[in-house]
Length: 462
Image 1 (spheres, rainbow, N blue to C red):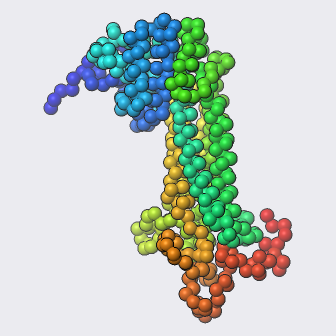
Image 2: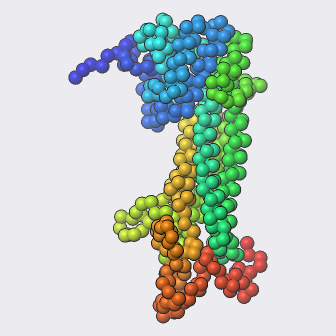
Image 3: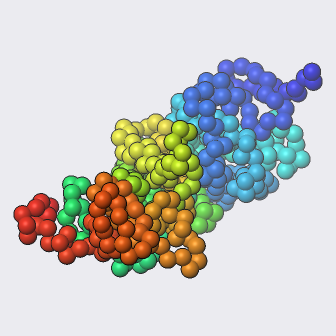
């Protein structure tokens, strides 16, 4: 067996051997040993890594501008950060996403990776920190207290951008169905009981509008995330940060990220206040709850196909049972329900200084909601089939060019049956085309006016 080469590094606790090829160092090594919590490294959070690299680059440029960092060091640090933002060395960010120290281990992991890559660019070997140091140079004028919250906010903005785009895709899919089914009549329901007729298009237009409103609320909430505290350093004292550094760092960071960033008016308040995250959490919960409601409706409307509502056909994407042949389940709305339940839990967090777990929860919720919106749009809603004039079973027949499916009637026994001619017999009862309470096709006059005969559909029913 070939022995793994190591280099020796030192910290205040002593000396440790670090793999020679690793860009991380002794602080990261200790964090890996201490925090085997989630099993998920920060490498799984590319937005956070990109944000950390942006912060380190902005700090290096600000320090050079203020005469605190040699130009060659600043250039090497900036170049290393740009490589990281291009996707390189992400596998070197190995600290668990959940760890103690309010993000210190993540900050140190970033400092070490940037420093070692900058050393290589300067012609030195990894670990030769006498030429460029993770703390004295890469972390110059900074503290985890301001670096980590700033990076988390930038990463959140990046992640929300993706979610907003995914929600727009789903909104467009619902809106397209609203147009396609604008003339398809069906029965509206309250308390799961028949109410008054409506169109299937109206139903889908409501789902589209809910997404449009939630996108607006999400855009409003993310604006609060643009306030940063870079330059506050340790507990907002400004320790080791010279006059003018905070503004210079903010200015460079805004250019690097392309974001309109503002420095908090009161850094002492900003470093401990998680109000913006509370606001964002509430909006994510709102999106999750309403998205889950839409999926619950899709599952109900597609239930059956023989003994349920069966008003729409969802695309069959996989077999639904290992024991019941032909069964197809609404698995896409179901998985979106699960994502929504997870995201809604974000709203229950006791938000405080434990920012690593806040980010872990946020990033998961945002990413899962984004993927859920895309899956629902692409694997379900865009292929959603309204029963107009009606289709039974898996719904695949509606995809055939030129196919004109026959109307579906719901019979007394709860079974759907496709009539093949002007008259057919089922269970000894004769039915004609247009008969049966399939309100989504052509509601009978009697069905519309049931309330006049004293049924529950009369005036006053909600």
